[in-house]
Image 1 (spheres, rainbow, N blue to C red):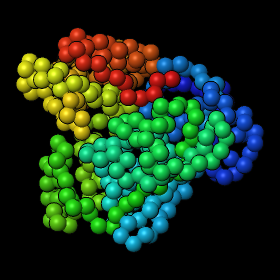
Image 2: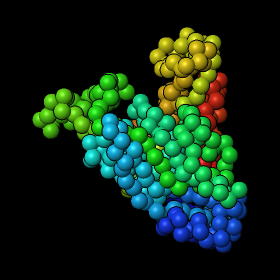
Image 3: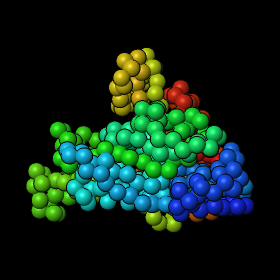
Length: 336
């Protein structure tokens, strides 16, 4: 988000086993619930400018275990998620390609259960290795034990307790049965343009090609997170879930409102971006902050905004969406 914040003390972990073998590190840093653990910092809004102790993992080893039809791929928490996507798709492996161009680290991915373009990490997650900061023990959890759901996990429900160290995902050597699935808006058109430029048939589309197509779509909708400005966390709000009854009322008043079916027949997921845009916020300026003109779900730092200013903008949008639609939208990033 390009908001300035400083730590009084900062510890970087470059080697996981050596770090955990250090009693002082375990007790003084990790066991302290006030110690903030950060990955890439790409999903954090700092409202305070000063933090006490911060730990970051930079260990970034990765590898593959061939298990016949599938590959068990692992990565340490400090590897960039997008880097992992490029590494696995370059090997011709299918499973992570739709997570291309998402900032942040591998270690943060299961905490948020990151997802995009029709898939979530839980679709391929096999297991995680983690450190229980409270009991000071090393654990290996299956995907089920992580309790992943839409942008949520057991890690988020028990904050400041778990330190993700390594992540394992199960990938495939062959594309899935519905390959390539372009049902998500924007993918089909971008795929046509990409294949025309490459002069390649659809039948030759590989995992690395899908990663490139997703990258191109994301860059048209979102600020480039590698650039200094505008600062952005990507999607700033969760897509809200409402009752079917309330969704029908909205449909009666706004026939174009997009509704997404869920496993629960009495609930419906709405598009937070659509609600915010209909309320008139897309492209609006709020001091040094604002709403991105290409996507209403994205708040930006135009340069010089602090965390309080951005949070005030988010709160104003939440209140206005409630006034228009009686729908509560919630912020997605961690607010510190």
